[in-house]
Image 1 (spheres, rainbow, N blue to C red):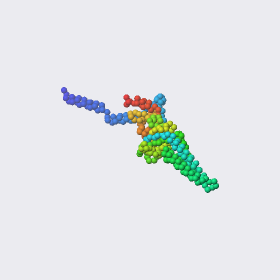
Image 2 (cartoon, helix red, strand yellow):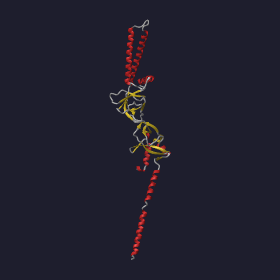
Image 3 (cartoon, rainbow, N blue to C red):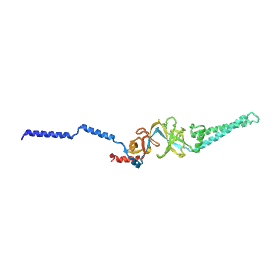
Image 4 (cartoon, rainbow, N blue to C red):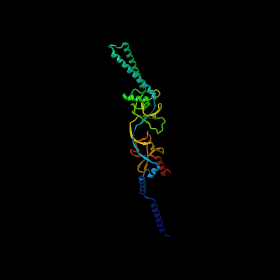
Length: 327
């Protein structure tokens, strides 16, 4: 046997085996290029749920533009709607005392004008008129003080406005609300506005905005700062307890996401924004600042974005069912 021929055959076989091994492993740069292309394809893929006009109508999807909202941090207190009988009695007492004061003052003035003339009244009558005028003046002042203990010493009205407001309070057409906030929770100036709603009210009940607020005497039963306010709400019952909020921080500008637009998924709050006709993108938002009609947010959405206000739950279900990762 020719040993030199055998060595050549073995060497040639090893060469072929080595070439086959090198051909089975793709170059590293080719693999990196494939990964880059796959990532690019994933990035360029449309985000969100795309529906036809027929599907949108079938799901009952409705949108509306998002609106700008001004927001301020608030502190919570408790208020009581006072009975109008208390105000009515005080107002009637003041009006009676003022009428008596006017009459006695006029009688005293006539007596003094006639003094020293023919047929002048006696000194006893003059002294009696003076005494009665003083008594009526004191009664009128007391009635005013008694009324001020009910409506406060510095209510935001005067002149004709005072007359009409007191009449409305006495009639019960306007409610007098007394509110107390915890110590240190309300800044030193009197709040310009308040917000109130019945205790235990559901989300469909709209809170009342109050614009007339002024200081009230301290509540002996509850430590804190107290205020009076005019409540123009016919559906607020006298004697009813209300939850009340006062602004405590600077006003921020942001966006209002309607409550009906929010959906909860995986423990987070989302809404659907129509980025372009028929394409809806699930967008996360921070629900830490609830307001009357929904949620105040400062990022993630913009004014004018079309948010889904009907059918958001259906979109969530549709997207979850079509997501391969949900299976």
